[in-house]
Image 1: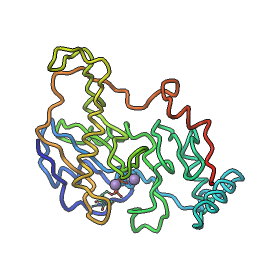
Image 2 (image 1 turned 30 degrees about the vertical axis):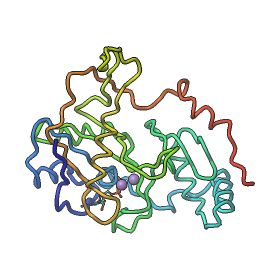
Image 3 (image 1 turned 180 degrees about the vertical axis):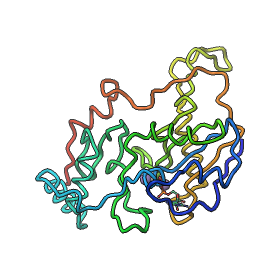
Image 4 (image 1 turned 90 degrees about the horizontal axis):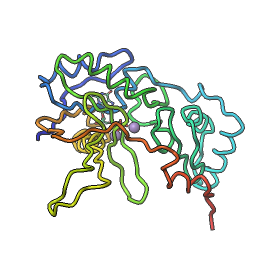
Length: 255
Ligand code: GDP
Ligand code: MN
Ligand code: MN
């Protein structure tokens, strides 16, 4: 397989046609997977906001005060308010805000970015409202019959370092379901469901970078999903998410 970044994309602005901008610069093929950083999807969708749009309520004030006393850094309660408004569940309030977004993604600060926000004078870039629909919209506007994955860079529990994950996708299943297939010893696989959209997003992140590279889109070419069952499930149900359940009962305490 081949993986390359789409060169020379402009600063993306609200209303831009991302599919058109991409196809002006690369001849996409059917079966390519186009991985698009959520940053530019959000910009194209006008998901820019100002801190002033989020006057802080009492809960946001309380959260910001607590985070400020833990970190020693100044925290703007309006940012906490923005995170609350983008979320359906607050899983951890301290020492950072871990929440579930309205579309099911669990992440720090509801994925709201304060970097690469653009030069339009706005403070915040919110994640796309419904990234699966964003992926479908981009895909529908491509001439090629390619798949689209919307990515974001996220941290992870248990390990240092961030990597790309998929928050929206269309044109390929989220996962390859290996259950029922056999390993080299003839044993039947019982649990392996491989989240290929996350793997593609992580690979895309290798070439898009995190800073000022200006490379928000990566194309994966000649990669095959293969002859496997597909699965659309990426986000765990709360009932089977034991880590989340454990965190709900956990309180941060400084020694
Ligand atoms: P995120 O992972 O979706 O939060 O996005 P990042 O902020 O990490 O940016 C990913 C890549 O896209 C980096 O190479 C940025 O320089 C680039 N990027 C961000 N916004 C734009 C834009 O409007 N135009 C272009 N050409 N590149 C951008
Ligand atoms: Mn981001
Ligand atoms: Mn990134």
